[in-house]
Length: 441
Length: 98
Picture 1 (cartoon, one colour):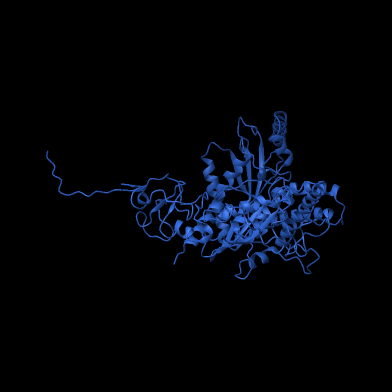
Picture 2 (cartoon, rainbow over the protein chains, first blue to last red):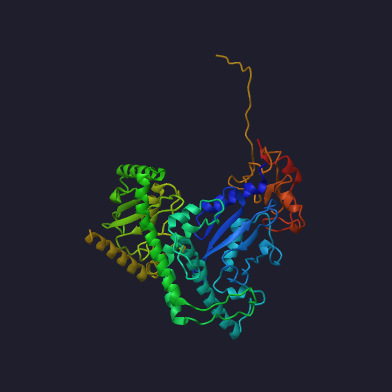
């Protein structure tokens, strides 16, 4: 029998998945919509910035009359309390969940839902989480001010170390020295992840792609903190932290920096490795190979008759898993006269694993990271035409809305959304990269 | 020419007198559809309009199952004002246009 709660959960899941919010993701196994995994990306300008925080959400049959249960998973194996309200043991204290005595009107109601819960949790991840602790809301003594800064400092470190670096290291099977064993080839891991008893890891590809977007942000943050904290300095204990529910450790920014670089390197190797896997798939006449070949041919055919966009699309070495897009800047725009090569690496696991898109021609653009990674979001993930369209739109968009989660080039973004003079400077530098792109041809 | 109508069938459509894109805040289904437990929209799954102007599917499933619990304190799930039916009669029978 269909159940009221299942219908509503399914509806909510698809709404969040289709929604434009880049900082929330949800997933569940097909057989079990009551056990949902949610990923919250730490808000910009907070110590949680671009961290990956995962939660398990369990809905009962009484949902939405009763609130679901929410457990934090990103807790460093139960050792780290990331927020006064997010405990090391996973408990999330939130009045709408009924896990915290709330003011009147803050309790759960059946008009609340998954998205409002996730947004509430996200709002706990603030720029000054110290004041989240009950009794510390108005703590403004010098002692508290010092603590507030020290609290932010250690959260920033652990966000990078636990929520980003260790997560990615696990995904990529990078040995941390803790675990003995050899680095396992990725295909094996991918194979295993299809087994029924494999741990449910729905956000692997998402986190990998986001890591590439935000890599320069992570590095900038590490560089800045390196000046402030000597390696080996101990974290300060907060007055509200107790045994078994605390955030302990030492600053290790030099090692974090190296580990970020290793991850970045591995991710690039992974995408490059798809080319060889792809050739194998072509030889074995795998469905995905002919699928991509067909999509490629259809897109090429389609753009032949489309005068609005000038582009050139080809397969590198006739491999349907490596596409090269030549983008010609639209006349009368900042990109006028530019010619940009964009390399698109496709995984044999497409569309579960989405393409990695990289500008080979340097361009100064707020959507393109210093390493050339383009930040874009295709509306239909399994349709390469939608990807190509989204790529073009991301690069051509004239007056984008300010969304700090899409800013993958900090310098370009600062100028683009800066003063009038800075905006002029942005345009000048973009134009210069367009000029240079012509010369490099 | 003279036409004699021998037989005619009237076809009518109905909808709740509600904004088009609005959904019930509890089951998140459109008002014109039913709540997730009912089969037929309309009088079998009527709406209940509160004094706070928030409406929900009524019968047993959406607003009633909420109000039945103690923790609800008889408040509207949307605005948390005490939930009072605005017009019992209108909700049960009227409000639908033919």
